[in-house]
Length: 226
Image (cartoon, rainbow, N blue to C red; front, side, top):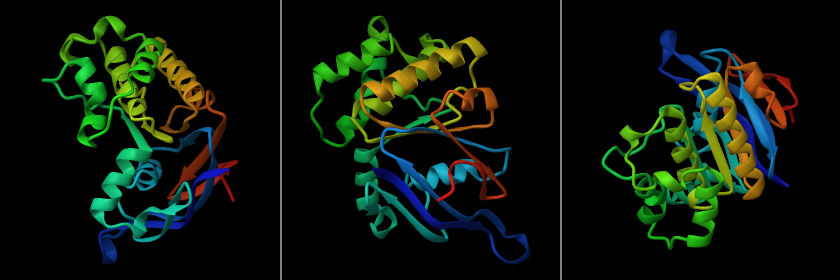
C-alpha cells in the first residue's frame, strides 16, 4: 500500500532572474513499511523534498498525499495537527530542548498534542534504543550518538506512521553512524513505520531497502520513478 505519494511537485524560491527551482516536478511513491533513502549532492533538492513530504513547507505547485490525504488541502492549523500525529522527524542537529531531561524530550510531542503516553510502548522504544540509564540526564550530558538516539525515540514516541530523517548521521563518527542507522532500521521494523532518510553518503544509503536519486530537483535514478 502506498503511504507517501507526490504528483508533479515543484518548489521555487524567489522570482524573476533570481528564482531558484528547488524541485522540478517530482513524482514518486513510497510503500508502507519501506525504508527509503533519498540521495543527491548538496543543493539537489533532497532536503526541500523531505520538508514537503513532512508538510514543513508548502510547494509552489503539485500535491503530496500522506496515507491518501492531500496534506496541502489543509489549512496551517489542520496541517500542524496532522503532521504531529502522522510524522516523526529526526534532524541532523538533534533539536533537543536543553532544559528538559531525556525522558521529557522524548514525550514532549505527545504532551503538546494532549495525548496519553503508552507506557508499555514507550518502555519498548527506550529499551530498543538503549536509553534506560539516561532518562534523567540532560542533552549536554550526552554524546552525539546518544543525543541522536533520543531524537529517534522522540520521533517514534507518538507512534507516527512515517519517520523522516534529514542527514541523521551527519554529525556522527562512522561507528556511531552505523549504530544509529541500525537502531533506526530495527525500530522501523519493530514498530511498523515507514522511514524516509536524506543522505549524501552512498554507503549509508545502501542500508535502506530502496534508493531514490535526485539532482537539480528531479528524480534521476534509483527506483523512485512512478
